[in-house]
Length: 131
Image (cartoon, rainbow, N blue to C red; front, side, top):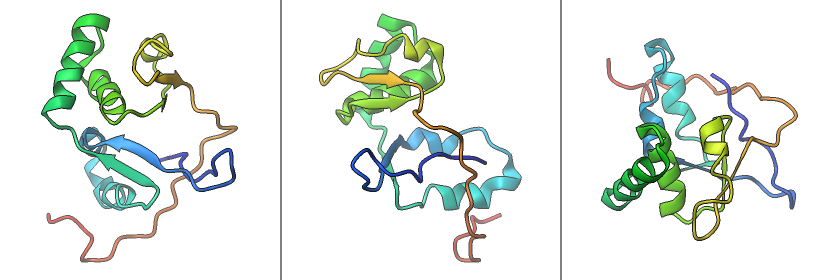
């Protein structure tokens, strides 16, 4: 598993990475479950709820912009929580840069020189999910 969140912001401060609770259910190999659980407990992540209002926004994005359900869910979460920036490599979402809001949502590729390895400690027995 790889991530790119442990960078400093433009002002040198820590970066907080918002993500939708939908991300927790990403299709990843079961053998990585302990690492996935540890990843979503990182202090730099801010996991945002996917509620009924967010689902309504997502439905509108599907109807108006033809987004896939998953892309609409992530984008709707950004809009619902009034985020101003979303990183993606998805060409369909990149085409919506500056189109959505208010506030205007910038959708760009991540501004990173490289992708960092996600070095997580092995979770303790209490942190491991049940079998």
